[in-house]
Image (cartoon, rainbow, N blue to C red; front, side):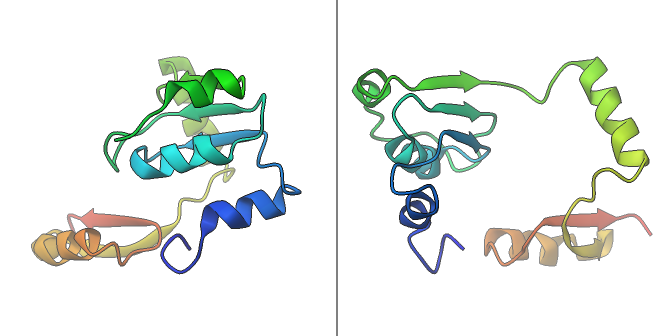
Length: 127
């Protein structure tokens, strides 16, 4: 839980004190900056989101001094998306849903999202 502890320090410890070999970041912002800081020398970082905003104090020298590979990616090609849907339909993926709100309760759902009170996705349902 990024709110109750030092997640970066915990990850470094879990990775034997040298940091992780690979980081997959979906939020950007300060999370991405911390991930670059803790990434093991020669490590790789893939990023595909920026919901937390930009990295304010990005220092490129961290990338070349540690010989880190940074890859920006999207959610895949249409063919990969179709394969993912087949995998989901076969029961291979189970999204984490925090709560389903009726569409009439959209303001309440939005408040929950703004407060970051959810664990998983918030769903608005038509019926």
